[in-house]
Length: 487
Image (cartoon, rainbow, N blue to C red; front, side):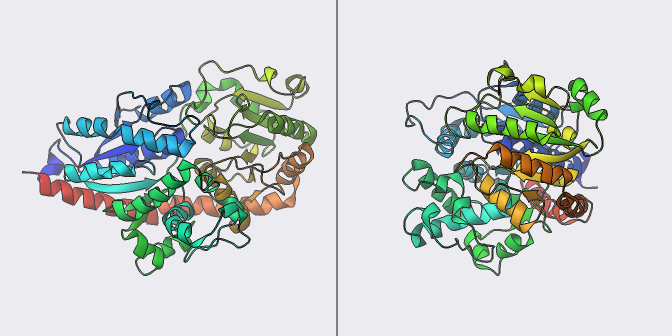
């Protein structure tokens, strides 16, 4: 056994998470794997954001047992340096610039400095700090390799495409990948005059030029083989990115104490027939307009299917209006914004929960047979690994891209005729999709494909599997850097 393995000194990895739960949850799971599989020390730097019981609960579960060191960077004020009404990507990028001095100071003050710095998709401008402290540097993409490929190629599309992307008649071509429908582009590409578009183009440039040792992606090889091949050394995208791409997923929150903290809900689920309940949730940051929420409520009621619906007050602004809030410690009464009488009329067939519910545990319950989702990548992975087919109702970010992958490429979801970001999906169509998912033979074929995915994901994470091997390669690099720094 090596000297460093015999001592308390061990390889040390630092992770940097931007605001929002979509990146934080898989980043924490990545940190846990470094600890449990490779006996690393892991420090997670958290960027301050409005507190909520949701984020607090996630951080507490990550520290029980305490295997990660979590450091919340000092609070900041960006009001004087950001334009009013700035879009989400723009806000996050500015936040991640402001925190760089605090991150540098925190690392400098550590007795055991990390051997590697892993940043999420918004933190690439902090990567040079790794060079200052002789650390390896990696990018972690909490989404899939299709999103990575699009982001990498957007600086080239920026020069090739004239006018707005959403107005293009032809599909957007990415070398080696399936084409992207113009209407499926990520939010920052919807308006090329918006400052967040220029931030996104710059992110693509930084992905290609700034990640000196590799890019980790929250997927596994068999799920995204086409894009991962395109990102290889022998292909154009691989030549653009210049560093290895490591599929290390699926990284998702494991089942925990959700059942005990929601006893009434699970007692109700226990009494329902197998695969009879549809779970409805739009993620930690998604919000619906009042009109769309009303139509979903009526659609659920008309379908006469059992449901569990996680709701938050309807949005006044954009669909990602809750991104920085992730819920409220004092959620509003759903009766104040759901259709009059809805809660009374459906009290025997459904349960409405304010703001947050233990999603992994719900999807894993035998009575749950469908998932009406915004198609965030974390939720998609949870659906895959629990074998639950989906109704795709994308709202923002890369969710339209995900929805097309789920429906057209994988065949594990259904979706409305028109994007909900263009028009309100009516109650009749909601009812039709719910019944199709819960009654139709189509769902049986989806479940068969999902069972294959569930097995494939487990194989990827097992010893010798593609994701386990990919993470081991990264760990080996970190160990080598550690050895080179040990006196």
